Image 1: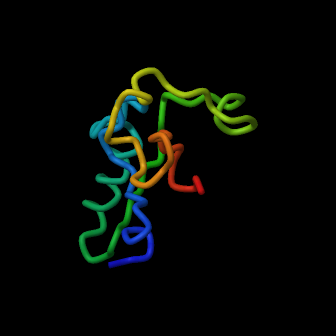
Image 2: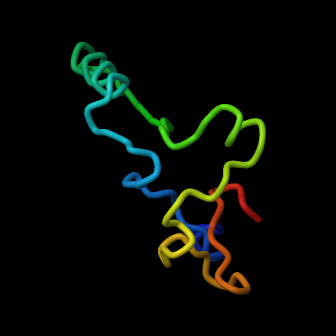
Length: 92
């Protein structure tokens, strides 16, 4: 087990309701076309797109808690006092 798993930190979920991620966005389609055109090369595509964040709220300042997260037990870190919601992979 990795250190993150032992500390109770989990990987972010692809199906994040606040991000509205799509399997058919233009970035993914372009990456698939690129990979198909190069069958003998390894192509890795990672999408970090999230339509739920804004430049000001989320990059320059902290993003307000999206609706629904406070009540969702999946977003709580084990062992945090009072069940404080997880803020992301960089939260302490």
